[in-house]
Amino acid sequence: MIRLWFIKSKRKSFADIAAAIPGVKFDQEASWNRYTSLGAGVAPFPLFRVGNTAQASDLVAALKKEYPDLKIRPIGGGTNLVGADRTLPDTVFLKIYAAPGGDLSQIYHAKDGIFFAGAALSLKNVLDFACANSFGGAAGLYGIPGTIGGATVMNAGANGQCISEFIESIEFLDLNTGKVKRHRKVSFDWAYRHTSIPEDQMILRVIFRFKAIDPEEENVLLKRELLRRMRAPAGRSAGSVFRNPATTLPAGRILEKCGAKSLSEGRFQVSPDHANWIINRVDRAELAPTEKAFVETTEAMAKKVYDSTGIILKPEVRFIDMETAEKWGTDRPRIKVLVLKGGVSSEREVSLLSAAGVAKSLRDAGFDVREYDIQQLEITEDMRWADVVYPVLHGGFGEDGTLQKMLEDAGIKTVGSPSESMKIVMDKVASKKVMDENGITNARYAVVTDPAAPIPEGMELPLIVKPNSEGSTFGLTLVEKPDQWQEALALALKHDKIALVEEYIEGIEATVGILLGKALPPVEIRYPGKLYDYDAKYTHAQGETLYLCPPQGIDPDAVAEMRELCLRFAKALHAETLVRVDVIVRNKDNKVYVLEGNSMPGCTESSLLPKAAMAAGITLMELYSGLVMDALKK
Image (cartoon, rainbow, N blue to C red; front, side):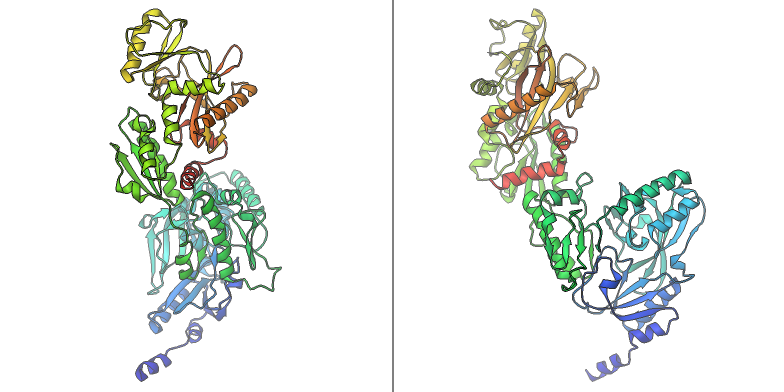
């Protein structure tokens, strides 16, 4: 012990090491209030500042020689950093400053749009210089604050662009040895607001490749982006607090929907102008800007979103204290969801596509998702594991209520309407009876079970003939001539024991999604032939089908009527959690007829209910998460 104390006492102090390297500056008690834009964190910390590569390299080598176990952590512009309330053991911080003639604050154009830029520069500096040399193409990144070193580590982005799109290679300082290395961009993984760049590598220089541009046109784009950035909330902040859960779902929007703008803790308050910004209330100087208060504010924001939607927000800010980063959000367990897919019906392939979209959206939202290709009716361990089972199944036992009844009997929470409701929706004749009982206008119809039966008495051509319990227009026929009747009937009875015969209504078809008790905007369906059949839906041999949401060719009064009728139908079925109802608006008088329902509509991006939801401002992530949370509360 005595010998060890003697060795430690002979070590050079941090101040002595800094003094031995010309140009290096050292502050034993630096403040997070000074070196970060947010100003959170009250513990002082040791900070070295360097102006060029040589100083940085010499300093790291000297520090690691005297203190082999010392952790050296870089600080960029500090625009997305949250400081600490405690002194971090065995840790010092390193920052580049803009020294006169310092190579880390310089930029030059090599050739063919290749630019070498020191890590102390901002993206604004880089893009201005590139534009002056007739190169650019990255105007969407123009207003991103901080240094390009920090922006690169975070793969910062805006307006659909990310900094990694323009990087060729990067020069690093190894914080273990002080050696300088260069790596090509492909050496690392790049994702939304994430890279695999190790923490012990400090960016010194970024080599960009920009495309040739017209400087005048580029300047217009740069100024436009700068003006947009100038409208950001006023006050000290770290910028966006959370990553966007999806490209179509900004974090600010979901936070505002969930009521996060009312939150504050100590010195920190959610901006009244932007729900994804937290402002340091410097006017409340009597309160210390603690990391704890900032973390509590972010936790409360994320909890509001989680409790309402199940979506787990991920911080975009970086916590200096790794213990804080590791603990953040651990009180919000991931909700376990089993997505059932496939099935054995004729719509198996559509189910597989739909389920893939649902599973991806739920994973992106933070749910713990498993997928199961169900081939037979049985309760599995995965079903018992799940908090919620999400059956993305079309037709067959997945849509006729059989599966749902089995899950209900086992006490397993399930997305969708009750089994009895799904049974009726799948049965077109039973649905017709519900419509009749509730005064919901529908086409005149007859039921046929005999393949040799004549055209039902009292019905005249043209007629629609279809199976009673099949989906996706399988077995559907428009009968316009008497000699087509028997073939159409045989086809329908091939798919089902019961054929439904309806009067043909010439008009405009549409569909109305009912989601969690509300009617979504209708989707107008324009198909090239006389019938919205399998070809019009999937194969398009006669031409493309157009899906217009909101409708363009339907009278507004008819739109209002169809929404009211469809919601009434859904409520009569006790299927208002999730159902899509098909209608037709008769040409001659704009009268609305309800056709049938679909209790587990398609879930691909091109499917009609998701299309209607997006028109209503509901993203796919919100759609599927909302259905899971609804099932969880049952």
